Image (cartoon, rainbow, N blue to C red; front, side, top):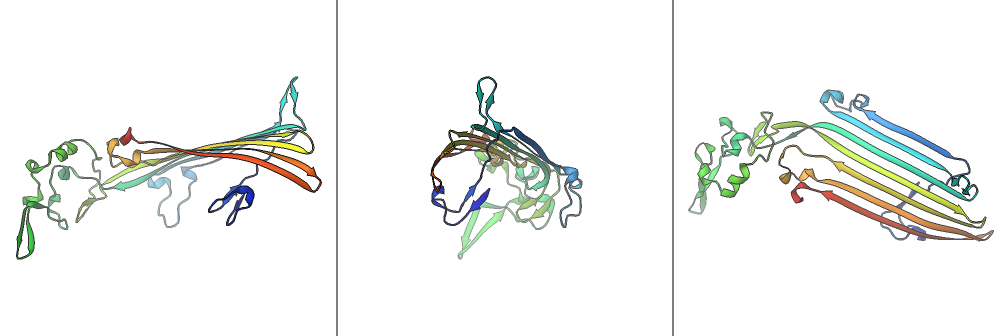
Length: 285
């Protein structure tokens, strides 16, 4: 494989940014094949630079598997067709399955906040909540009166807000968190898991009609699905991170090579490429 940048040669068309050229080998008269597996588990993950604890000591998990296989040779059907020296095939597959867990902190509303209580136990450093209906203007100066005890009475709640807050939208805090001017921060910590899945298949067929005329066909298909959820919002309708997106790419081509003379050849190629993105999102059905 090689990467072509700047101005592309004419046979690759016009593309801004460059192109990746991959050469797929054809089969031979002898069958060949292979398989492999690259994997990594949590105990194999080294401690990162400036990280005081090992990977598993931080409560994280890791599962990384990348198997692959390939098979090539002549097209041979006993008693029907002998493709040696004429017809060849190559098939290959690559996969990636990654599962990685990590501890993540979020900021979620406290039970007091969900009931209109922004007093935070009298802790300092938190802004007062003012009643907008008490706004007055005197000598060009705007002023409002704070709610007593920083508590907004439920009688003043909008019906839509009341119905919305009656549902369990957020996860409940499991840490005290830090009081800031706009509320409590970092009061939820949970272990989430990232998932990544790749699947890639390749097929190549070669046909030699004569010493001067050859033809090939190739087809590749790969998909990628990734999912990294946020756990602070438990109602999936309101959780934008619950979107699962799958990319699917198909590439196929057919080409011929004809030798006109010992110093001149002609090539003809036709290629097809399609990219598709499928997305599922609970908030949109």
